[in-house]
Figure 1 (tube, rainbow, N blue to C red):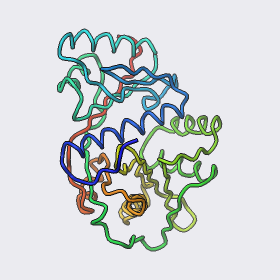
Figure 2 (cartoon, rainbow, N blue to C red):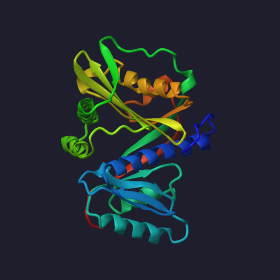
Figure 3 (cartoon, one colour):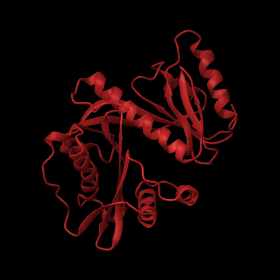
Figure 4 (cartoon, rainbow, N blue to C red):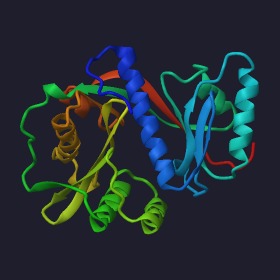
Length: 273
């Protein structure tokens, strides 16, 4: 359990941001019933489900000696699982050119996202909500289903991902966790936006910000993002973090987020090396 981070020294913020991502990814893997591999150099999990975000590497710090051999051995272990994979490359990843090396093995870079942080004490005291929008905390299974479907559509994730999420829900039901909060934005009687708050690494991490296409451009995504950040502040958190998509970058800058590092996301879909 990390103490709440109270200052903005760059190395500390980046480390906390990485810990938040790694802890949230590990919690997701456990929710999927995944098997974990964790040693001094690398941490990865495999659920066996046929979707990249259900299997992957969440930490890699290969020692300089025998680095090529270590990477090759890890990739052979991963390919033997015969499922699609994701790999998060963060500022502390070693070697620093690991992304380029992965591409040489046939991995593709899906996205490169600025890792951003915000002083929660600088937020306006009142949350401004667009006209007609209500934001609720998801507290039951029916609301969670609305959240999952809205997030999948709003994020342009394949429909098959929603089916997988429903399978996970059918297996576990709605599970409350002290580190996780889901937010669902309703415009009149339609669910149109989502966000997720994960408390870990000493910071409040925002994930899964998504708005249905026809509801964009009204400040709805901003409002569901701020809902979680305001709640984190009331709980004593000082720093909010996220990894921005190109679409959201200017919005987050206007809120006061600043870039502290870069995160890259690589996918693997071939089943053999």
